[in-house]
Length: 414
Image (cartoon, rainbow, N blue to C red; front, top):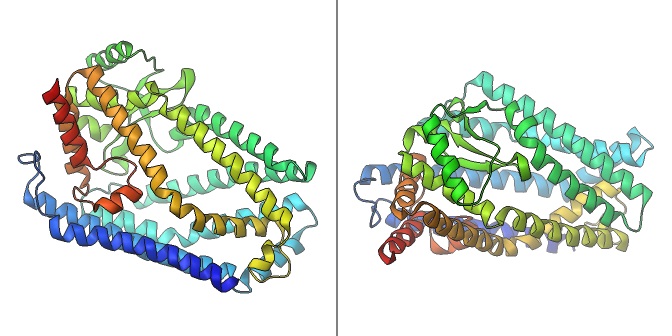
């Protein structure tokens, strides 16, 4: 059975590699061709630079994926898992303490092993293409902050989950799911004020006129936000973006300072109208409900698999702790969930199309959003020629060329 599991995992990895190969081959054939409607905003030189950036990103991603896959297989299908599990169990007689140590040490080791890729991406790849502004000191500070935060949050989640499992062995799957769901919603409320400020500085817009235009536009759309904030994204990178954060009364709009420098006023309003569309159309809540429904089914499936008792045998080990079996289940689900990736991508793209239509209805300027998307693509060196199969499988947003064509088609109809 162990051989079948390894074969299934390698087949999943091979399928991902094939998709990556198709995408890069398609890019090699069309990467320097300026798409229809993009002439004047993007030239052949910019297209060539974008293609090189995409290729290098993909190569680094492939090496990182192969590296992580090799480590995972080595951990699960050699005596290493059993020895690690035995060592953890010898540290304490507590079910909860052992489980927490098992997960925390693995998380810390994974964080350390990921350091070379983070350093290379930040200080070589991103710097080579003019994006990186992170200093070594800032990178170290971010790494330490994120590590401490990850350990703290993971400790809270794992400790609480294991305590519930110990308290209710038959129905833990429901109580753990309920706790995780409540924790997730709580963090959505708290993150804009407790987590995000640990890494970035947020301040009101320096342009009162723009902020007023934004508020008036949102009022027309029936939306109220706590604030419109500028984030100092340029301290780390010259990539640009905008996003909604928080829920309920604490929701707010965040604009990268890089975006404010790149866009005209009508383009900024169009981008924000698109982001507002996600909230107005209920995408945030719908996505949250879908995720929690899937999580409930997942927790129940994990309960049944562990309760079955044959899980360690699939990996050809005689016994395994609860925490070790969670790692085994995660491995199985990573294989099974690969086939569901296109469905999740499709649902996300439908939300993006709907948000685009909302933005046009709210602003009345399809060309403003189209122009903003073209600028974002140019400034971020986006791949304008993804392979259709690759985009169908992985893209959470419709390809930019298709979005721009759709917006301009809507302008013609109007």
